[in-house]
Length: 292
Image (cartoon, rainbow, N blue to C red; front, top):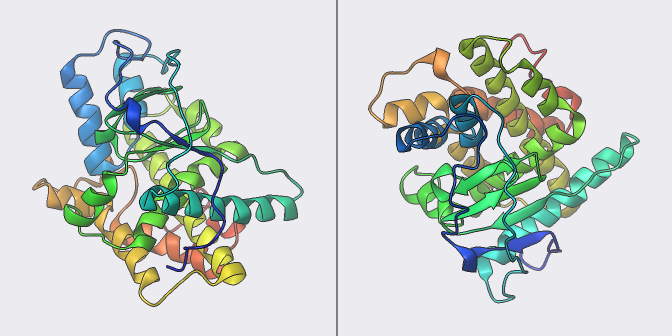
């Protein structure tokens, strides 16, 4: 991926020197949460991809309570190569989505991206590194502990800088969904449908974020020729490794389609590819698609 020398976003917050900080509570409304509930949420996050914030909210019987703790944030050090990569990828997503929104007669509001280590407070509850990268609509921020990239490479078998960029683009895809009101419509369904039905909707939401990641790659390639040989294969491999069916098999469990939240490996690859080939937001309408 040809990213070095490109524009870096100013929207990166570095909280890594605050690693492991905690507000002292669960950070969620409703009844108190024990370690067992937190463990369930983290397992669901790591192996299924579902947001642990969502799981903890459902388990607690309430909505996530905003964290009020103030956290000092600053720009990453100029010599930090990985932080520079993240800032460059984020900057590229900003350029693409600003253009896409503008052509649609709308204004794109840029998200912040927070680098943290261990734990950090968010508007959605206490963020933990074990959750993997996630997006919080409450503060419109993407959160990532950069140690996740080592997990992606060594434990999940998905190396490569474009695989890493795909992860960021997917989370930014959730921000796009938030701006478009799609996430809010999903939230309205919570509690009014069965867990199986909500999981099915979650799959469509996540596959759409994959498609939006492909839309970013399409436009970035057309404007700046970012892609090098093997980059698309890196992203496709990452999508395959984090499919619900692949994660369930790798964890030694039976594949249970009703528990899927992100979609199968084949589905994640397919929707990223749709966005990549067409570059069209309209083609990413997973909620109306008959075939996922």
